Amino acid sequence: MRYIAKPAESEAAACIRGFVESQRAGRAEGIPWEELRLDYGSFSRAPQLRNLLIQEQKGLCAYTGVGVDDRLVERVPQREGHSFKPHIEHLKSQHQCRAELEANGGIVGRDLGEDLAYANMVAALEVSGTANEHFGAVCRGDLSLPIIPTNPACSSAFIYVETGERSCRFHSWP
Image (spheres, rainbow, N blue to C red):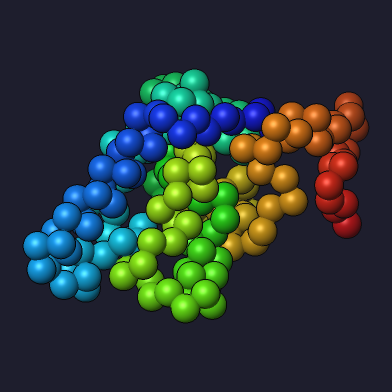
């Protein structure tokens, strides 16, 4: 896994910040929070953010290291019922972000949670189709990760050998 730095001042961070500021400005004008929600489900700039994250990551998936930019379309033949596409991956799942917000007394949509945190988002490969072909982000689902690509130690966490076996200093597989 390759380390992904998340600088506080980046175009991607500004994209999220701009959305949050516009929602809060509307609320200040008296528009109810139910109409100007602060959650990822209401985030209207996802295509722009996805492209900015892909640029930050040099076109590579945060988990697999494969191209999620234009190279993906060029190299991966599309089959009916299957797709390989880039998407915004939450390192801490949206489900977990919502649960933590509510556990701390917040209300999803009214209060800002980690589902809209720049440090919690990366570009990753999304695979849809036959379940036994899934890997990366789709396989992970809502599971917590033992190591994430925004951890500087991630690049030295995994060991791969010629036989295909793998190990992780932070997690053991069955």
